[in-house]
Length: 165
Image (cartoon, rainbow, N blue to C red; front, side):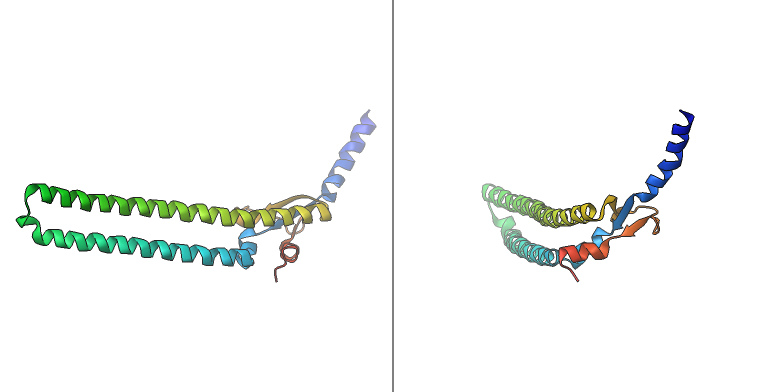
């Protein structure tokens, strides 16, 4: 029994060294992907459109507020109240539109990044299975230390698998 336990204690460290570990930096990989670049371009166009729409609404509010201010003192109370309500409603609509646009941008960004992330995960899984890796970790999120002798940087393989240069 002691011999079996001793043999297990001697063999266990050897089996640990036989395991393969890998690492990569997903932020670096993502930046080189054409999907990321096209997503950024699409998001920028969408943001520009939203900003243009909001500017149009803000200009309309400013124009109506200026016109109201010019004639406020000469208006009867009921008309003055109606104009103030219209201005408040337009201001609320601008705020709602701004919030909706931000949510839409975030949702679109998340959808685009999910596609990119899924593509990377699929490639990492394929590399891991083909290379016999036990674990492949993403260093983007601040892993404090990775031993370059015990863990292989698979970034080059990953770029090749994704068709990147």
